[in-house]
Image 1 (cartoon, rainbow, N blue to C red):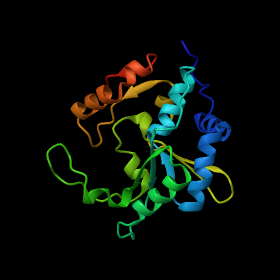
Image 2: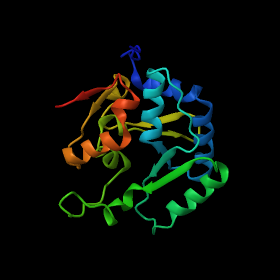
Image 3: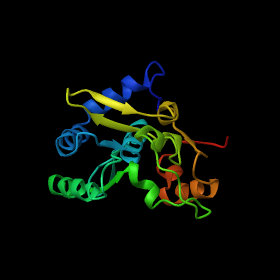
Image 4: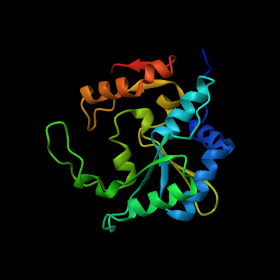
Length: 194
């Protein structure tokens, strides 16, 4: 079984991991130039850490890479502009760019109801389906890595797959487990039922 990262400081370890990851740093540097407020988030961070803990390669080519930002003043065109620039810079990668300030315009709960607008990027991440997915990383103007992880980093580094009931049902979580094959891909993951 792979050894989890030390509990001393998951934040410091995430920063060190990303700083040593050439491709992620290239993307973060380009992203800073394209949209200074944008973050890499979700699967690309989660999967990179879980692959490392399983001593597996995780190539970013042909991988969906989530980019998130928060701009309540934007009219809805920014996502496509950022995506176009990223596709030009990194044509072998698949980009999912979302302004979390606009999610309430299109996202629907299981019952069909719309959601209230988020007030921040951290609030948006806090309702993502799995605790280990609610992580975003940015390279700021001074070259420092900035992390938003409203649900913490413990589950990510301790290989715990835990449902976050803040917005999605357990049925949605189960569909994601099957669709993404988390437990097959990373057999050391522990499915946490509570």
